[in-house]
Length: 457
Image 1: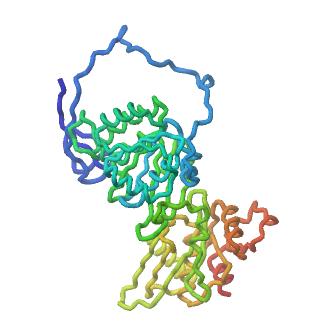
Image 2: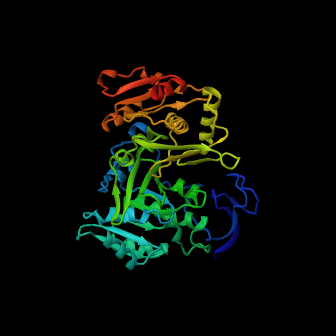
C-alpha cells in the first residue's frame, strides 16, 4: 500500500528537509523551501542470496575497457553542431534553457525539420498541434520531413507514444510541463522535474535514443530546478539574448561529450533563426568616421574571437550627482576603470556622467576589452575620434598597466581578416609571437599612458 509523506524542498537547489527552514543549508538562499507531498510505494521483496543482491555487472580493469568515438548525429546546423562538440551524441540527454520567447522552440523545431533522414517525435506540453503547424509553416523546410507531433503532459502517455512510434530522436517541450501519476505535486515542481527526468535519462541510455529537453529559466537567470536537472543531463545549453535585438547566443554550460568553451550566434528573423558565421562583420557595419567615443575591441567568447564596437558618452553632470550606466558591460568594472583613469592617468571624471554601451545588444565578460572601454571614454571626454582601422585588446590593471590576454593569435587573425591596419596589444603578448606571418601593424603598450599616446598623440 502506498504511503504519503510531506517533505520541504528548496526550489533553488533541490535540497530536501523534513521540516521547513528559513535558510537553505545547502545553497544559502532564503525563503526557498516549499512543501511537497511524496508518495512512497511499498517496498518490493528482493531476491537476496547469502545477504548479497544479485549482481547485474562485474567490475572491470581500466585497460580492459574499450573506448571509441561517440556516434553523433549531424543536426544540419553548423552553430549547434559546434556547441554540441560535433553533433548530437546518440543516447545523450540534452537540456536547452532560456527566457520565455527567446526562440528555444523555434531553434529546435527548425533544426529537426531539416532532419529528413531521422524519425523525430516532438512532445509539446505548452503548444497545440495547430500552433506548431503555424510556426513550422513560417520556417523553410523540406516537404518530406518525418516529424511526429504529440501534445501530451503525462510521462506515462509519453512513453506509450515512444513505444508505438520508435523514434530516432525525442524532443520534450518543456520539461516543466511534464508530470507523472506516481507523484501528487504539481507540474514544474522540484519533485516532478526530478522524477520525470530520471526515467527519461534511463530510456535514453538503454535504447541509445537521444533526447532534447527544453526548460525555462527563473527570475535569477538560471534554469528552473537547476541543480536537480543539471546533474541528471549530459549537456546543458543556454540560449540567451535580448528580445529587443536580433542576435541570440547559444552557450554550452555543461558538456560531457565536448568543450564548454564554444558558442553559436544566431540572428532572429521572420522565417526563423539564421546562423551567423561571421558576427564581426554584422557588429561593425556602421561607419563612425569623424565620431568620438567609439573604439573597436577584439573580444573572445569561449574560443571564438570577434570584433565589437564599444561606445561611450561623457558629459557634465547636469543634476549634481554624476550618473554611471553600462549596457552589455559590468558596471562595477567600469567604475574601477574610471578610478584607474583618475588616479593613474590624471583625468578628472568625478563630476561627469559616463554612459557605456556594447553595440548590438551583446553582453561581454572578456576583460580584454578594458583597453577599448577606457579609450572610448577618453575619446568622448576629449571629443576626439580614434583613427579608423585601429582595434585593440588588453586588460587594465589597478596600477594602470596593460596586462596580457589569452588567444592573442586568434584576435590578431580576426582583425586582419576584417581589414584593420593597426592593433594595440599588451607588450607581454609579443613573447613567442611569430611577427613574420602577421600583416597587421602591432603596437605593443605597457601602460595606459602609452596607449593614449599612440591613439591621440
